[in-house]
Amino acid sequence: MGQDVIIANRGEFVDVLRSMRRGHVLVRAGDGAAGAVVDGGVVYHSLDPLLRYGLVDEFDNPAGFEGARYYRLSPRGREFAERACAAWQRQPVLTRLAVRLAG
Image (cartoon, rainbow, N blue to C red; front, side):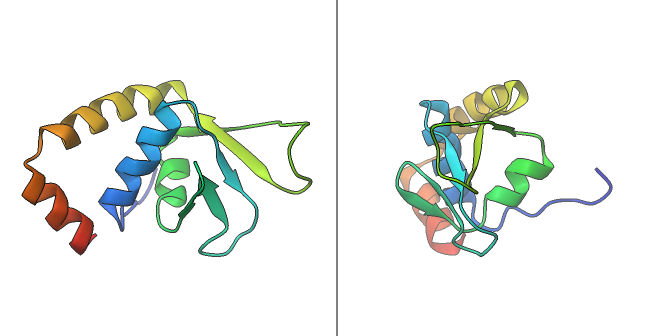
């Protein structure tokens, strides 16, 4: 990969993985900070790590919006999401809250 990818907001990252694990797709409508959504929520920080770590694959959606890009979890991403979501749930509630507040 060459350089490390920073996960700027771990709470958002886990939320995105959890939604995508349930079958929701990530939709990228633009290149701005708020240009991606999953399950109705804006994805501000997690798209770059998902792409750089190979956790999502782009797919063609002929029924989708023109110019939008669509992503699903890759096989690697599905395995990672299973482990990450399980590890997140094992954390104490106060730890998860602190991570959400601090990013």
